Every structure is written in C-alpha cells, then in structure tokens.
Picture 1: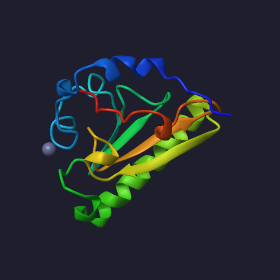
Picture 2: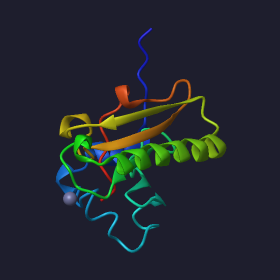
Picture 3: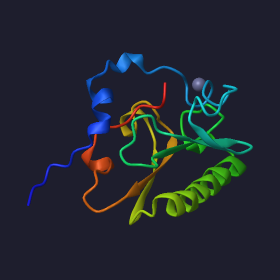
Picture 4: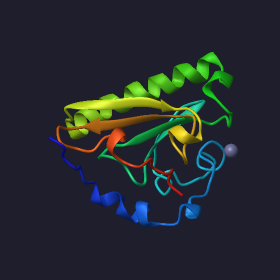
Length: 143
Ligand SMILES: [Zn+2]
C-alpha cells in the first residue's frame, strides 16, 4: 500500500524562499545571548542542542558543535563525545516528554544530507504513521 504522509506544519518552509535561511549554525546561533529566541535547549562545553524550526516531527532536535568545520572528522575526541552525550540526554528528555515509539538519530554530513544544517547530529521522535526523514524534504536551521 502506498500511503502519502502529510506534515502540514512544514508547508511554510516548503513554500518559502530558501534564501531567507540565514545564520551559521556553528558560529552565529550559539553566539546569541537569548537561547529561548534561538530555540537552544541544551548547551555543553563544545556542542549544543536546538529545536528545529520546521521539524519533521515533534521534538526534532539538531545537535551541533560550536566549531565550524567541514566535517566531523575535523572535530577532536572531546567534542565528538559531547555530541553523543547531548544526543543521549536529548533522547532521555524526548522519551519522557513525548513518549514516542522510537527515534531517528543520524548525522548530516555535507550540504546534500541536510541542506541548511550540514555536519549536525539530528534526533527526531517517531510514531507509527508519522513522516520521517525519508518522507519529508530536508529542514532548514532556525533562522
Ligand atoms: Zn560558521
């Protein structure tokens, strides 16, 4: 059975000019003083987590290092470890808050893998019948 999944909350992103997405997820977002305004929900020493402005599902988080680099291969061991620790902490919080049936946890490497948020770790809650990364256009980072 082919079933078309629908995520209407993403229509404003899909219909918007992609040129409106601004701000570097590594440099500008974490430098902002107002975490709430930037949807930053968790900060570590070398990485942080923020809510996605146009989530695939409720609780769609991006975990990014503060260091702007071309690939995670450029990150040191402590930063890589903290990204996984923040991912783990995010799963715990999302599990308690949303009680999802599962999660998609992945890493966007390169612009084609996550157009506006390359080189970030993503964490998305899942429920049966809900759209997933494989059924939705890629999201932008909160601008
Ligand atoms: Zn940057």
